[in-house]
Length: 291
Image (cartoon, rainbow, N blue to C red):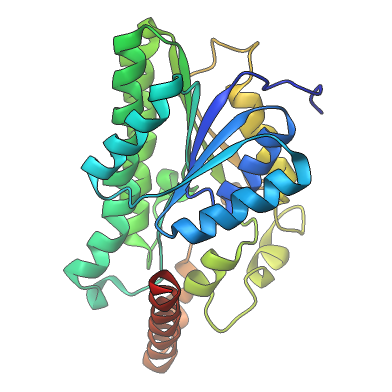
């Protein structure tokens, strides 16, 4: 779809770049010649991803272990990257989410999502954007949101609220920063299977079952479709495109709302089983981070 070397000379930061959608986008950018910077809370995972992708495609990836909920740590990472040369593009992909009845949420549970998605995304965007403006550099920001920003979603209220904030940030900064040559756009993907999302959003069931059944195209999304759209949004040639959120979901959100409304039929026992499964996964993740 794109010519070889399309992104040569570009320096791109992908948050949450060690796994899932972030890793997929980073892979495509590397293939097209970009220099990559990826970050995540688990530095070891990011380093393993960097080694894997460079071993397969060559190029250069620098890995950072950064919790984007910490604004000082974010600013230090971005300052370190800019020491050698400015970034050209930022992909806001890091996120957190899990299903829960809202009345069962604790304040810590709400903050676990909101602090990553809303606060963390702003911290990174602000740290990069202010340096672009100070240095007179052009730049692109692409943020990953969800289709629920348009119609809301029960049982994932912290995510729906926080992703809506990123959608609003995209529109707001697109107008504020356009005069500096900085573009901001967002992608709202449907289900593109990744390990992390399925464990917290579909505990105890196949992560793609509902999408295959309900999607107008009868399938889930493919990683290359997200890779291609993200590449298009940062590539040269369409600089008047800014402030937009593009849905990539086979029209499922038009047909069904594409949210978690169907979980209204769950019993107390099913919700308890989901909480137990999510708790077990969280404990596994904490154990991995401590290794």
